[in-house]
Amino acid sequence: MGALRLVAKGASPPDRRAPQPDTTSIGDSGEILIASAYFIRGTRWRSRGCGVAGRTRSAAVSVDRVLPEVPAEPAVRPGDPFPAALWLLRHGESEGNLASEAAWAAGAEALDLDTPDSQVPLSARGRDQAGAVGRWLAGLPESERPTRVLVSPYRRARETLASALASGGLDLPVTGDERLRERDLGVLDGLTGHGILARHPEEAERRRRLGKVWYRPPGGESWADVVGRVRGVVATALPRHEGERLLLVTHQAVVMAFRIVLEGLDPEEAVRIDHDDPQPNCALTRYATGPDGVRLVRYADTAAVEASTAAVTEEPGADVPH
Image 1: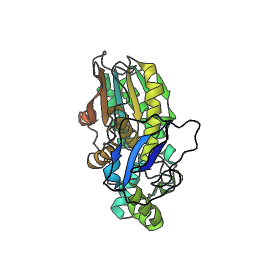
Image 2: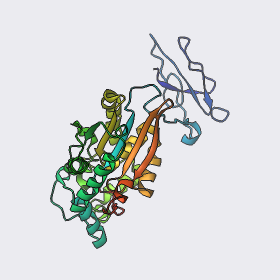
Image 3: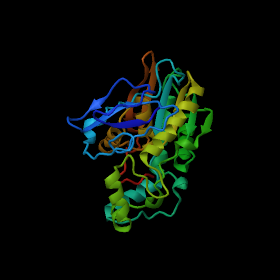
C-alpha cells in the first residue's frame, strides 16, 4: 500500500499516482486535507507536515473528526473449517483464588502465595467443581458430548481436566497448547490493587493512561497480547478439529479473548463484560457452528456446578488472575 499523504489545500500531487477514491477535507482556506494514498514510483516527491515538497504549515486537527470507524468482524466465516461445537471451561477454584480473596479482604498488598503461577493447584472445592462438570458432560447425550480436549499447561487447568474426566468416566484424547495459558502479569503478579498502587505507582498511572486493553506490565502481557495468542489457536489448531466437539480447559482472560476473536467483540466491551459479569470457577462458555457461522450459545454458564453439591465461586474484584 502507499503511504498516507497530508496535502495542503490547493496543492497538486504529482502526475504519477493511483489515488484511492475518498478524500476528507477539514474546514476551508488552507486547512488540512486528509487526501488519498498515492502509489509513487520513480519519484522523490514527499510531503512534510501539512505541506507538499518541503512546504510546511501547522494546523490543529481533531482526531475524532478524521478517524474512520473500523468495525471488527468474527475471525471465522461461514463455511470455514471449525469444530461443530466448542466449549471453553474456566478452571476450578485454585489455591491462588483463595489467597487472592484473603489478601483483598485483609487489605494486603500481596497474596500469601509463593508458588509460581503456572504451578498453582486447585483447592479441594475446585476439585469438587471440576468433578461436577465431568459428571454433567457425561450426562449429555453421546451425540453432544465432547470428543476431544485441548488444555492449558498450567497446573490448575490440568487438574480441572483430570478431575472432570475421572468423575465423568470420560476417555477423551487430550492435547496441551501453551497458547491457552493465563495472561502473564509480569512484575505485578501476586499483587492486589493496593499493592500495585503502593509498590508500582508509575505502572498504575501508565495503565490508567493506556487503558486495560493495551497496558502491558513489565515482563508481562496486555489483553491484546492474549488476543493475539488466541487468534493463533483459532487459525491453526481449531480447523484441524473440523466437525468435532471440542472442549478447551483454560483461564478467564483467555475465554474473553476467544469472545473478541470469535464474535468480533470490541476489546473494550469485552473488558467491561469481564468486570461486570465475571466468569465463576468452572463456568462453561459454549459456541455452536451452523450455516451462519459460529454463534455464542452460553456465556459463563454454571449449570453443571449448580446441579451438584459444590459451591459456585468467583474471585473478588482483583485484576490478578490465578
